[in-house]
Image (cartoon, protein in one colour):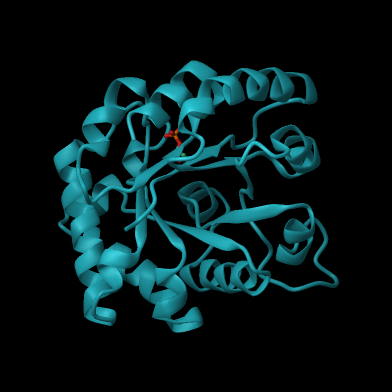
Length: 250
Ligand code: G2H
């Protein structure tokens, strides 16, 4: 059985004051579902300590939005996976489409980050997804398989199976457009088939979540599909009502 998981990606938002107010409201609203699903909060690096303290013993997990592909040393501005683990992180996003598109992270670099996160005993959440152009050209799975294959080449299929895959169609991120529940379910199913071709059974044992303009209004329909194990939530995770309603739909 795959345990549902809901991940809040706060992106580059928040402040000491607003984080405290948001989390206080959120924790109260999430109380009824805290034991049945895995809940993860990924703030910006400077707030990891604050969020870790606020989460305390609530059962919610701390996550980070990225990790360096290097282990340590002369990498100004980078944050290593080991540092994140020391701060209490249990999950780290790698290869978010904003990292791939704005900061030009390659598949190989994403795979190297994945391995760093794994090596520091945390769970990588590897983000994959196609652009609108790639979808229109019928290349959705070619792109996703290429992105996943890079991780498999670097860390192995067993490592990928024990991580979380986030399917985020680039055209649905922060745009207000959401993949239809059918589009999302079909792609999740195709990812599971790809994993099964790599190792029999891998498809059914890997947690795959959907991300891209998920909100309370579309969560129930998306999560109806047994293919979808949860969500990676950006904008809506900055509102306690929205985020808890999404969690209740899971
Ligand atoms: C996809 C998602 C979470 P949003 O990037 O990372 O963001 O829900 O704002 O589309």
